[in-house]
Length: 455
Image (cartoon, rainbow, N blue to C red; front, side, top):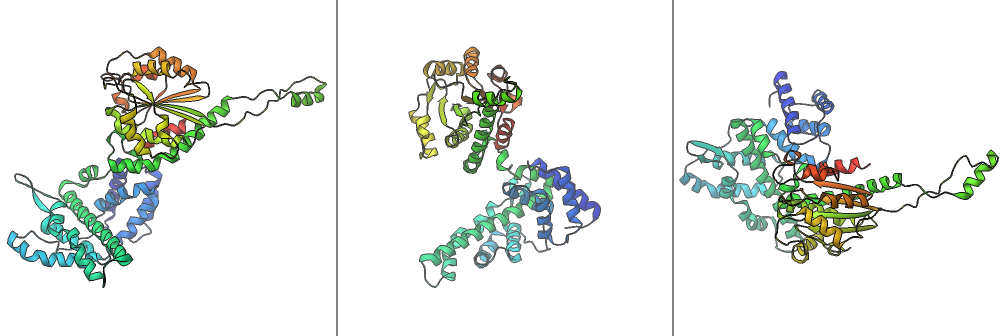
């Protein structure tokens, strides 16, 4: 890594910009703090430099994986001249047993050993370059892992590490081997990214390699793994949402006249009650009614919002949940206390009466909801509608929605589509938003921002 001042400044600016592009919140002041930190650390110590940047720029543990990936791209390790070279197939077959034996030795040791990553880099140089298109070579992790097959070395390593198989020692050894195999896989992937960045440019590989932080993952594009991580973000937000709604209710309510205190206070003014004293309002948790679009077009969003509904049951006095596609049905009982949320979602698709023709019809849903559940929305209710406002060109029933919103204490609409796509095609976002305030809610960060606006 070079320490030329001009080059280091350019690299610092590019790195901070790449962090912002990846969704990490880095302010100009924090960028300056990081620059000041570079003046007091040894720039030749790469890990010290990494931790200096992390201490000044990373705010949440969830942001650390993306930070580390970008740091490795912008500040790659100093590489020796012997990185490994491609060999013929015959030579590969002769040397492969020896290479696999060396890999087994490293996997039984400490992944922090410099020889561990040096070996990974050498193997990428030997096996990682393949023809991606006619006349064009590129780098990949898969051929390296396929050639060395670290998962097939587990039995050999257990035999070398243990005098006797079974019991707790084997469990500990297996966990250690699993960790080192994962570390080797990541070391190979990191070196592949480095080589591609050297050939194609750091900016290009950074945009494609870094996943956004979990709080900025689009609900409609979340993977199964990301949904599992999103579940852990739900419960803190549910508590904050309940608190915000409760505060709004307390601010909007006034207690009854306290006659005794008012008369007592009037004695100091000759019996004239100049100041009316009120009883404090009785504190209570708010009630919530959730209308959730469960159609295929927003299935991932509905999955997350049903998780939110499940969490909200613990925060509100009363929660009633309704799912809809082109008709509506109550699903509150599916989310009874103690129920498994994923099991409840699976039962929803089988048991709830929410589909006539399989095409979302918001107008019919609102009319059927008002007809079938006339007592659901009342003056103590917060109404929360979750959906993309796409009604397949059906009648919108704005009058019915206006009546429902008027019956509620508060009404909100969360839309998982980007605002730029509202009112395109069959979207009725502006029409519905004129009746119920509509908020773009594509990720956890926007959901958190919505919760903050309720204060």
